[in-house]
Image: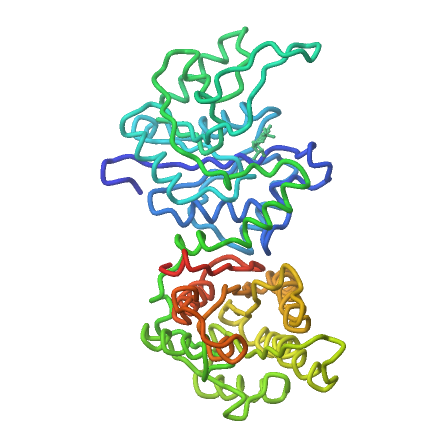
Length: 463
Ligand code: C5P
C-alpha cells in the first residue's frame, strides 16, 4: 500500500535494547503498563495511524519468541517483518533500514521509533510524515526546560549553552529511506565514525537538512523504574487518548448494558447510545435491579443475552453518596453505601466477564476525583471510589488474556441529581454535563486501552 503521492511509510520500532538501566531482568519494552506491554501500546499508535503502511519490529533474538506470542494473542496487522537487532541502537536501526526492499527505497519514508515511547501521538506521527515532503530528515524534540550543562572528564563545567536554542530529542525520527541508507553505508566505511544518532549521521555526511517537529512532554522514554509510575499516571490522564480514540458511532448495533440507567450519567449514556444506534439495555434499582445483589445483576445480564444473543459492553454508573463524620454514621447506612458503590461493581464485573469474552468487549466503572485523596465527611464514598480504581487495574490484568477491557471513568463535578441532592444548586458553568461524561464513557468502552482511569474535565468536554 502506498500514499496518494506514491510514498510508502514504514515505521521501524526499535525493541532490541536489554533495559539494563531499569535493573529488571525483563527488557522495559515488555513490562506491563495499563493492562498491556509497553511495546503493544507503541505498536497500537502506529497501527492506528492512517498514514503508516507497514511496521517492522527490531528485536533481540532472545525476545523474538515472546514478541511473536504477543502478536499472536493481540495481532497488529501492519507488522510485516520482525528483524534481529544489533549490539547498539545504531546496529538495530541499520537492521530496519536494510530490510526496506531495494525497489521501494526511492519512494519510502522510515519513521524510526523507540519501542519504549508508548505515548507518541497521532499529531507527532502526522507532522513527521508531512515534514518529509520537504526535508530529507526530521527529528522530534521538546524545549529544554532545565539548563543543560556540558562537563569534562573531571566533572567540571565546560560550557553552558544558551538554553533557548536547546531541545531534547525524542522519537520518531523520520527519514527518506534512501538518504538514511546512504548515511549508514557511509558510516560503515568510515573508521572514525562514533556517531550513534541517525539524525546526526545525516548532518555528518551532509545528506540534507533535518527539520524539527514539536514533540510532547508526555512522549517519555521509559528508562528507569520510576518512569513506569509516571507512565501509569500519564495513562490515567487519558482524555487526549480519547481525542485520537474511536468515534461515538462505533456503538452502532453494539449491545450495551447499563446499570444505574434511569438517572444522571447512566441515563445520559442510554440516550446518547440510542442516538448513535447502540442496542441499549438499562437497569436500575428503581425498576428492581439492585447492583448490590449478585442475583439481580445476573438476571439482568441473562435477560440481555436471551434477547440479543450477545453483549458487547457493560457500564455501571449505580452509586450512592452519603455524608457525615464516620464516627457519627449509622453502621447499616455505611454498609449500604459500600454494598452499592463497591460490591455492586464487583458483582457487575464478575457476572459480565464471562459474557464479554465472546465479543472481546469492554466494561466501564465509575470512580470520582476523590479517589486520589480521601475526603472528610465523605470517607466511605471516597474510599469506595478509590477501591474501584484498584479493582479496575487488577481485573484489567486478569482479563487481558481474554481480550476484555475494563476502565474507570473519573468525571469531575457533574450536573446530576446525586450532586444536587448532596451539594444543592451550583452554577451550571462550574459543572460537567452528564452528556459530556456519557461521550467519554462510550468512547472508552470501544477504545483499545485497559486498566486506565479516564479523567473527564470540563476542558475535555467536547471530546
Ligand atoms: O537505551 P536506548 O535509549 O538506546 O533505547 C532506545 C530504544 O532503542 C529502545 O526502544 C531500545 O529497545 C532500542 N535499542 C535497540 N537496540 C539496541 C539498543 C537499544 O533496538 N542495541
